[in-house]
Image: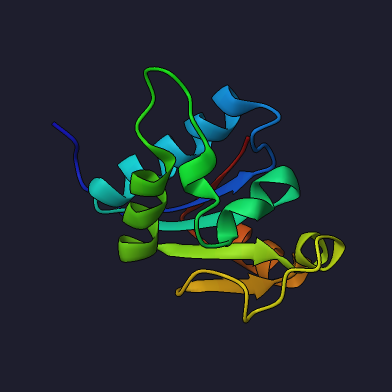
Length: 124
């Protein structure tokens, strides 16, 4: 049984299909924290940036892992998902391209979130 957490969890995922286990771990931890009642902020950076686009999470597959679209939907429903500004620009992804609920923000927003009181940050 999960207990409700009072701390905020910021999860930064840098891996995508290039490192599927690390990617799935990040999404699993973020979705599990949402289910536990934690405030969760998931940051998509590097190759995980592509999962901010409609349909891209459905292309991801890893045996014995929860489906990435389900994990992403859970975080979108109960937390916050942010796409890195520079990562989006390098991939020519605009705010009009991303899934509903995904915001694009940069390093200043990440630093502000991670330095807040009662916050734990994890990077995958």
